[in-house]
Length: 236
Image: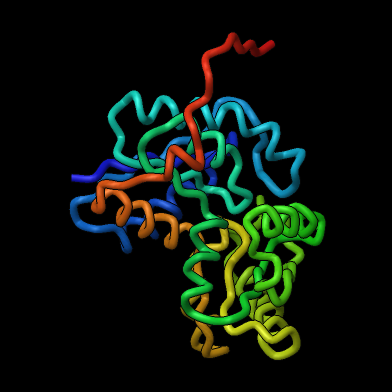
């Protein structure tokens, strides 16, 4: 049995049921999923400002998951808040959505485009792409112009995502599409049927990678992500 803690690093449980439904569809039979949210932070993450508000509570939840005996942690946000810090502190697999989705995409095509929520968040996504050294493989980032908290409107989301995805493929030259938010759920198959290129839901990519790491009995390199040294740390 594999126990995975899924940390949705926001203060609302708005998407928990949808995430659980998708994960139940794709997870291995012996995988147990536990979804949790934050008691402090932001209700949605789109920009660096939101990330910072959510990172420390996310890190604490990740540490708690290891202490509770979970086999792996998924930080369920495309901005990957606290992922690198959690990799330093934990010795179980830690998987973020952006890193997982892009690694999948690069095995399926040469250039990917990210279909994100609002134009306001594009700069943060570009910064993360540069940090991961994926920027040159990104054909474009296109927005559906919907706030994260409005993404449960599936009809409106699918219509906007299809327009943005079509432009990403036909104008920008993408041969793989990635949804740039974990809350963009349940529309990837229709987009694929319409455009004929792979469409990656980042949460599913993170789930499968986390399961594989657990089964392989491996995790991130502690040479790359060494344990934090002992020092006094305070929060206000």
